[in-house]
Image (cartoon, rainbow, N blue to C red; front, side):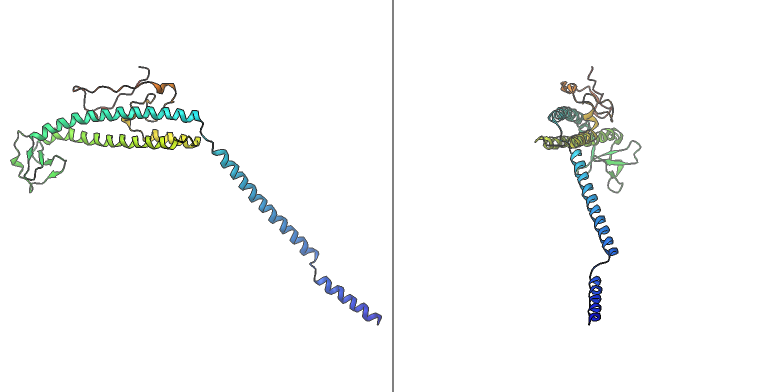
Length: 255
């Protein structure tokens, strides 16, 4: 009887031991849990570092920086207006010369005015399109009519001036957009620097020529007191060369 009880008791403890994890399993579980916790801590630490780094990068521009940038915009605006005035004056001159030639040009039946080359081999219309011999008998164009060689230079100059004008107007729109971006005074220092660099890159040469401090295509001026210098546009006259025949002289703030 006593032996039976001892056997039953031994079986009981054997079964109980089977229901519990052994020491090796427990040690493996604790190691894995500690590793998982370390991974979570590392990830959270990197996220905190990224957030702190981002916060450090987003430094708002000061009011002084914004005010100095507004001075730049004012100066760019003045230079843009001068460039537009000069462009218009040059366009007026070249259009007058072209009109004088068009008034004397041979007129085709469809109304196009045309010009024959000096060697008589080609004919072009007022828009620069070539006319074929089956469209027109070249001999109908009298030698007294202005030649294509007399019309072409100013024709190309006008096209260049039109392109220049569009570039100036596009830049003027960028200036307006820049003013809108700083209107509420909420812009980061980095964004303000980027905006400044974009305007310098987009500035047409005709505008750049009237911004004090620019002495080359890659030299951006320091916009301090020098940019409060009044810029007075030159008065075009009939004796001035057509705009585009030579580059604008660089503005000398010391002159």
